[in-house]
Image 1: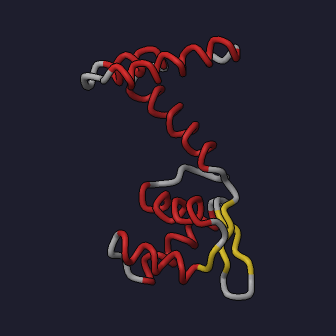
Image 2 (image 1 turned 45 degrees about the horizontal axis):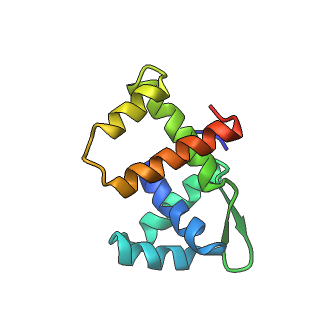
Length: 124
């Protein structure tokens, strides 16, 4: 994929990630309901995503297919956030997230299990 996906483009991608391959018209209908965009706005954003290599257009009927997985975009965005706002430190981001609110014992347990799974899996 060439370049970053911006918030508006991510809305288009989110429809594809949720619903799978679908027509540009369907994406426009969904985003008209969810965001209030008109058809022209959505088609422009789909074309930008195509130009960036995030979407493949298939005929007939302008069927859109996501070429990039949501997890890959999430990882890239997380890496960019850590680099930009947390001096490259995931630990600092994690500490900031933990300090944002009071967590229930159940939420804390789930977080502990996530960290335990990472340790067992050798992930860093």
